Image 1 (tube, rainbow, N blue to C red):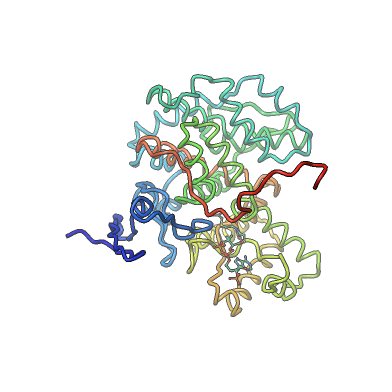
Image 2 (image 1 turned 90 degrees about the vertical axis):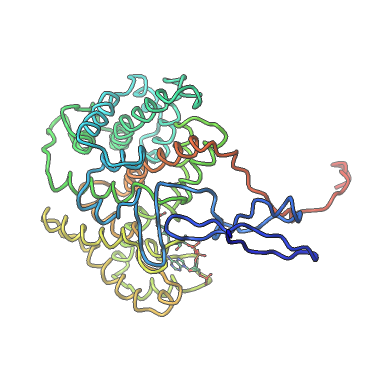
Length: 428
Ligand code: CMC
């Protein structure tokens, strides 16, 4: 007999089916509650609401488990490359050598962007945040590829749009950085692998050609893999909900970029480094900032700490912390911010407030330190998060379309004024 839960309301009992996921996680299917009882369910911030079923990512926040298509994040970060993880997330299986070569070659064909994008870029003030530039350039792709606007047209067209966005995203990201610095843009170099090509577009100068460094390329691959997907987080849910209106892939992903930008989500990596820098400027007074974070009347939060789902540890943070040590050592960089981050982590992990609330360092706590060592300025950190999250957004958008999911449209409880009559402006 299939499992069910029961709900009693106004003397009526209704049975609600229990759905079980492949890792034995259970949920109550509440979709019939309204038709049976007239009630809606309320869960602000969707803290305990599943919005979909998905085959892409499994996450157990209590045990600190993260797996993509069944493969652990630890194994993927240690053994895979970012393009291979892109393929895995988007198409469901690890590619064969031939499949990976074809995939990478298809992306490579699309790294160049239309010259008119340079005109759009020129229109931005030089201090424009690269996340804003990136989200609008991604939406602008619809103007250059109007056929992409119909996501129902054909599977081949969807695959082409996917290859285009994977190819052009690094170009846009690097160009938004060049724009900020007032430096000439660098065109893609298709003789290079995906990550090296991006690094060259970022760091090559007319006066100084970019010299590849395997330490930097490996670190970038690892960082991008660690951000590649994280099931139904704020930006991914945004991508799925925008896509559920049958909006095409570019505007859906552009919406995800905007959602990610916020400091409680992907914007935290920039906020962490700014916080650590300001603690150093303030005389390394860690206790002062721990006290501020615990003070209910102070809006300050310890950025890079806490997570909606992880209540034990964030497996990505463990890998990143080790990688930060490794990268800084190999590059011969010494950053006082890394020492401060470690001290802050130690103190916070022993403090009752953080222990009671299960607040642990998250993926953003150490990532900015590595990005800075690799040469990225803080305002590019969230762009790098978006770059990493791109295959996750694509895979989730594609899955939602293939499953023919309905329009996303939550309900609400209205708490405003009851019906009242309009008063003329002269009488107010
Ligand atoms: N510093 C101090 N107190 C905190 C923090 C923090 N970083 N995070 C949560 N708390 C407290 C919070 O004040 C609340 O206390 P109380 O129950 O007394 O009101 C309690 O812990 C629960 O916080 P919440 O905001 O209700 O919990 P949430 O699950 O909605 O929060 C979070 C998750 C990530 C928004 C939050 O921990 C936070 O603001 N962290 C700092 C920002 C950050 O690092 N964000 C990156 C998240 S990881 C990257 C990603 O996947 O987006």
